Image 1: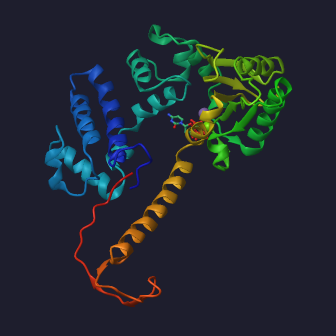
Image 2: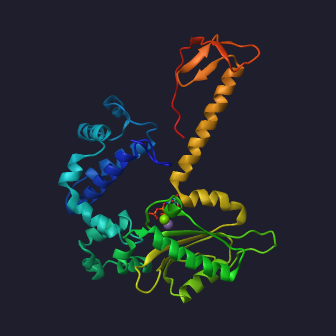
Image 3: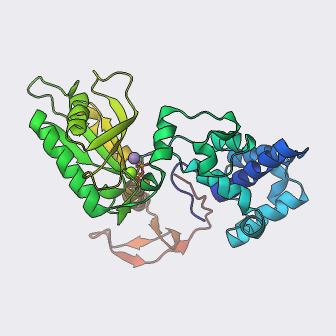
Length: 339
Ligand code: DCP
Ligand code: MG
Ligand code: MN
């Protein structure tokens, strides 16, 4: 198991236990079932555990984990999944996932709606149990199928081109770049992520221009509604979430604008393009690290390669990179460092 950047070493276990916790939260509301509390405790402890769990013995360090919980953790470690979750208890989770497909609905809201007696999107439409929806959630419900379908690169490219043309109609020097999964080269995208900035060498800036972009996109029928509007439009740094479409016959898509000051465009690009690019950079950093470690070893008259650290290496005095003898392998212990 390889956790993603920013995740902890046992994230796969945490994800599965979070699903179990949600199931038991539902059952807790229906009967006296306190297993959700146990899972909450175990999840917290797993989050704080600094390394990948390897053996059952270490599990004494996980707070709240009894015999059955330990069995589950070891099953996930060994097989990557939990059979019990996959085959026995998916009905309740399916409902939660269905609700969480509504934009703006997370695990807390979905649990609340379940507790209110809702089981289908129709129940949500009818506000069964007196539930309430925010404006954004209402839009999420209205465009449920559109928002939950993937977008082809072709369509993302076309929408982006239209938005870019509108931006350059406002100011030729606006820099509008497509980010997210599209920039990473994915075959299809969940939404359209656009970065906006502008150089300031002519003493001008892009304050207020993102709002003009949004207004013009709306006039042209590209943007059809807003999901969340920045608290301050008159800033070089803002986030906008909206709904857009290529043309009147096309599905409605999620659109994200991120405007940043020109000096921040590099960091913003990294952030907004996502994990995969960051891992590429880390791999490069790793290679650079390897090279400097080897150089350092050479200077100290050691030799370091993927097989070990060697002492008493005899080198050609006129050409130091040439080794006359391999030297002796030193006993060393290495600790893997997770970035
Ligand atoms: N991002 C992040 N953390 C978040 C949300 C987003 O680091 N909680 C960053 C990384 C993402 C980028 O912003 O790559 C865009 O976010 P999206 O949610 O649009 O994700 P992607 O574009 O990567 O995938 P998708 O095709 O599902 O839109
Ligand atoms: Mg995206
Ligand atoms: Mn996005």
